[in-house]
Length: 412
Image 1 (cartoon, rainbow, N blue to C red):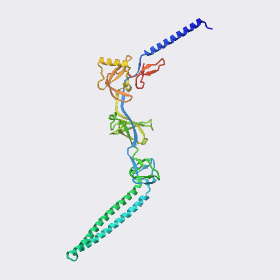
Image 2 (image 1 turned 90 degrees about the vertical axis):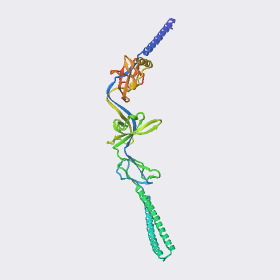
Image 3 (image 1 turned 60 degrees about the horizontal axis):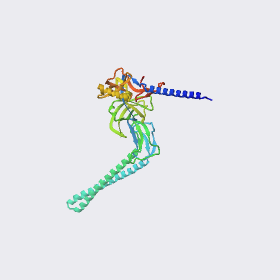
């Protein structure tokens, strides 16, 4: 049985242990709270910098022809398939011509009949004209009456009108005959260009109807060695893209390859989708090796400017801002010293004496990773702050305190 003395001693020991634990926790709390903040920095460098605009679009042939059917009917034969090379004038499909041949024969018969009627009208006109002329001479010497002459003159005029009507019928019949022959020719579908069949939309036995719109049977790319990309560029970037400028792009089929092209056209027509205004930029691409295929999605990078010996800082440093207490100190310091950003100036922060100190710089071209500095107060050996980090414990873990880019060499 424990004695009263031992119980009292145990309680005292427990209380002492609790006090020690609380004191240690308070010490660690206040020690971590007072730890100075550290920064990740990078030194300015000199080298090549390229300003770019990114976009995406689809690869298409420069000339792509849709081949349709001008007449309705049933597909009787197909002479080409996907990827078939074709020549201009080559037969690529045949619509059943039986109906069109019958129409040709029928219209030909109508045309021949109309011609025969016209010849008959010519004979009648000649006969009535001769009779009228004979009676004209006889009426002068009083051998026949004037009324008889008028009768034959009327007959001649009527024959002349009948001939005109017969000639019109011939012309109409000839037009129907020509149309029937044209429809028969349309039943044989030929390639309008040299190229490669990239799409076939019909099969043998399928009926095509050409009532209001011409149905597309084939799509033929005239030259797959020359392709183009229709890229959409946001209105905020379109001013940087110029005709004749260079562009690079990648496709998912060849992620390890970079392809190049040239801007051939910057279209003025705008497209607005969900209040976002974009413009179409056409990029010409050489596809001599035929690696690129129509319909591929291209991730395009337009090269808008390039400099070879530029002073560069990380673009992420432009987004760094110190904590509120330091920012207030920066503002008061700027007012006291009369500092101002001025036209085109940008405030960044450098590490000086373990603290973030603002400097005003003038920026040039840039991209997502680097930005050119063209002037300002940036010292040559400055350490530009990218982001703030704070120690989280003895294990050396850190916590980001401000938006920034990837680490570029910590300074502790």
